[in-house]
Each structure stands twice: as C-alpha cells, then as structure tokens.
Amino acid sequence: MTAVELAEIPFFPLDLFEGDRAVLLRLLRETGTAPGQRFLLGEQTAHFEAELGRSLGGAEVVACSSGTSALTLVLAAMAVGPGDEVVVPAFGCAPLASSVLSVGARPVFADVDPWTMVVDPAAAAERIGPRTKALMPAHMFSVMADLPAFRALAEQHGLRLLEDSAVGQGGVLAGRPAGLWGDAGVFSFVQVKTFGMPGEGGAVVTRDGELARTVRMLRNHGQDGRTRFRHHRIGWNSRFDELQAAFQRHRLPGLPARLARRAEIAGYYTERFAPLAERGVLAPPPGTEGRCHYVYTLLAERRDALQAHLATRGIASHAYYPQALPRQPAFAPYTLPGDGWPAAERVAERALSIPVHPHLTDGQIERIADAVCDFPVS
Ligand SMILES: *Cc1c(COP(=O)(O)O)cnc(C)c1O
Image (cartoon, rainbow, N blue to C red; front, side, top):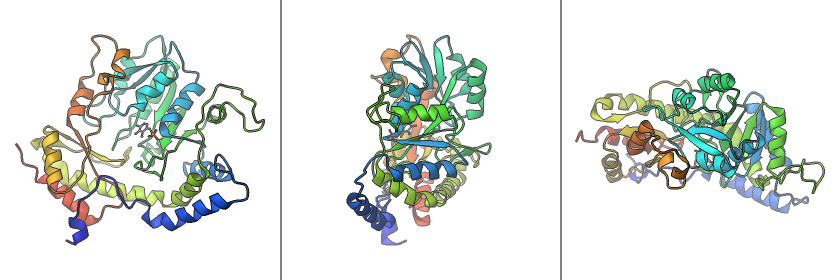
C-alpha cells in the first residue's frame, strides 16, 4: 500500500475539483471580464438548464440558489400555504420540514422503512387527511423512495407530489430518473452532493410547463423575465450564478462516469458486508434498481463504537441523522401529542454513513471494507 493510501480517508474528497481547477479559474476570468458583466441568470444558466433537462430525457429545469429554496419555490408554486398539510418523512434532513413551515403550512411526519430508511408509503397514506395538500417523499442515502406507490397515492387522493431528489440525482427507478416522478423534483448542487459544485445552488425539475413558469417567476421576486420591475407574485431572491452554471456545464458530461464509480464502490461494499448482518451491522439491500449513492449508510447496533473503530483506522464516517425530524426542538411543536415514529427513531440511533465518493481508490475502498468487517462482535 502506498503512503497516500495509508493516510486518513476523509468523508468527502478534498480534491473534488482538482482536475477542474484550471477550467474553474478560466471561467472565473471569463465571467469576470465579460463585456456584459452578467453574473446571475444569464446565458450560461439558460444553457445549463437546457442541457441538464436534455440529459434527463426532456424536462424543464429551473436553476435556483439551493435545494432548500427549490423545495420552497415548488411548494409556493403549488399554492401550499397556511391551513395546508404536507406529508414528509420522519427521518431525513431539516429542509424536509422547514421548507413546508416556511410557506406557512404544517409538516405531517410519516414513519420510514426500518431497513432502507425511506418514507413508507403505507405510513404516509395513514397521515393523509382533509387538510393534506401534497406528499413530499425523499430519497435517502442509498435507496430511492417508492415513488410508484407515492404517485398512485397522490392520484388516488388528488394530491400534489413533490419529490425531494436532492440526494437521488442520477438514480433511476423503473426506467424513470429521480426527480421526474412527481409533479416536480429538486436537486441540490451543494459541494458534497452527487452533482456538487464549489458553492450553493439547486434546481427544480418538472415536466409541467405551468409549474416551471411559476417557479421561474418566484425565484426572481415574482418577475416574468420579460418586463423588469413588474411583480406578478410575491417571490424570493433564489437566483443562480453564471460562473457556477458555466462550471456545471463543464462538469455535466462527466457525471455518468462519476455516478458509475459510486455505484461500483457501493456494490463492492454491499457484497463485502453481507455476512455482517447477523453481527449487528446491516448494509443496504443489494441491487442496482432505484439506487442512489450520495453516501453509503450502514445500520449498526453499536453505531458509536463502529464509528470510533473506523476512526482508529483513519476512516471518517458520519451519523446522518442522529435525531428523527419530529423530535427536533424546531419541529416538535408542530407534532400531535401521542404521535410516534418508532422506525425513524431506531434508524437515527443506528445509521452510520461511510464514504462512497468517486475519488476513492480501489486500495481505499478495500481498506474501508476491511475495517468495517474487522469490527468486533461485541
Ligand atoms: C441536501 C438536501 C436538501 C437541501 O439542499 P441544499 O442545497 O443544501 O439546500 C434537501 N433535501 C435533502 C434530502 C437533502 O439531502
């Protein structure tokens, strides 16, 4: 093993953009010295939106300032507001609940599958009531949520479907890419996500032209893009940078190869970890259908001990997320007394994510797998 491979293995790659640094600096110079001095929502953004849409087999893409604001813009465009409820996962990241609250609606938490950690459609169905306006399932770490079931549920109850595909970009389920299962989906381009970039950004994806038009207005203070200072709706400042758009255009053609490398690493881990199930370390289910590879998440009975064990081998890991969403101080006040999410609380105690980024070498993934497999039984 080389000295480089014996060094610490960081959770996310520190050399993420090393190969693109010269391009990044060239684009910075070009953007900074261009005669038009346009830094937001210009030609680069328009081209990026069109190219990303084409790569998805045809969809409208509206680039905006983050994945979180993408969720907020879609909820607002769907006219979700005070008095409405949105069914969201009980396990996941804060924007799942805060975006709903930010438009004045109430998040209703549905429990998750105890193995894949994605929101359970049966649990979501139980939370549908007279005030429910939308369903907002999210893909988690390694596995896409059961979007065919959520689509059927939305149709059956006449609800809007917003797919949080912030960690699902690149996943495909039943031939349909993540992001295109609902009325709208969202991506996040924050550095660590599968199509991350050096800064904040996100996108709304949809095949509903009317929804796309409204989101476009809402991301720029309710203007229609033709008449300046004419505000049709109360909007936000959620615009996209020209420099980032130019950089993402440069990075887009390489995305499939980077996703394939992530999938290859995840497949290797899952094979290596299969025997650990009886020893209290559960890997995601094997297979490639409906998979995404933002991080690779194990369920470990002795999670903190496994994390400490990996740290002694120089391997960084993260406990995403240590608390179920409805138990967070910010969101607990919006839950009903006596409500419970046992699976979400169990996975919050056991989930441990290990690196799966495409810059890992074969030597590093072997070292990570060896370290997990060496974890003592008790
Ligand atoms: C990252 C993430 C978001 C938010 O994206 P940002 O760009 O960080 O605002 C939303 N939902 C999920 C599931 C995420 O993982």
